[in-house]
Image 1 (cartoon, rainbow, N blue to C red):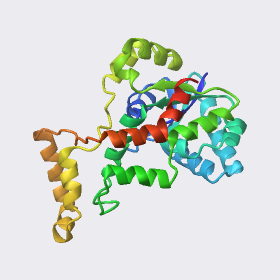
Image 2: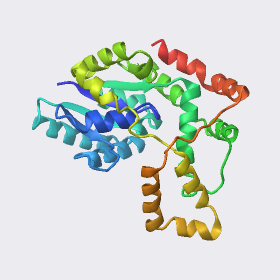
Image 3: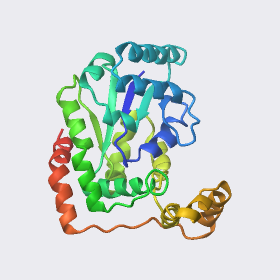
Image 4: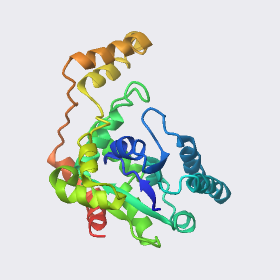
Length: 275
């Protein structure tokens, strides 16, 4: 049976695919992340990622052997290893040495939409992971300084890989449904109607809402912040979200910021699109 390595490009429906396809369908033997930490083999996936990150060949081999052993007990299932962390640890030598038998699956997204969505996700840490709110422009500067470029990572991997990447476009989930569902269904060997039903829920990880943002921002206040972090108020927030309109927090960016995004990332995105 086919073996799939899903390099989860951030903000590209990874959570939806993991939750509603890989982790739920009997067809798949899933080694990867889940929202509720209920994946049967999630710990193996985490250990494998740590081994890849540390470039420990012995440990990588150990966990892949364990995956193969489990697969031998479930020979009719398709093995899927999936995690967004893979995109930040793309060593082509590791992939060529250990994942030759795997089909590599990747979703990509146009740079402007991707960076706005990524910034919204970044803000979910406001008040818990950090206390200073930075602007979108400052966020772009941070990415540039730390040389964080997921597109470039994938191109470097592809240029040195012994097999091609299987690339799907996030935007096609909405703009070109018929062809997307057909192509993605064929790749996974799943009936198109099953993919259609599943991907109706493509926003399984909706990101930052207005209520979330207010909740996180209050946490930065000295005294009130400590109270708001309590489990009681956390539950109260969840109740509020059920009964009040839970709109996503909107962000508008300037043309200058759009131009900067395109300057930094567009050429890499276009190269990937033309593979």
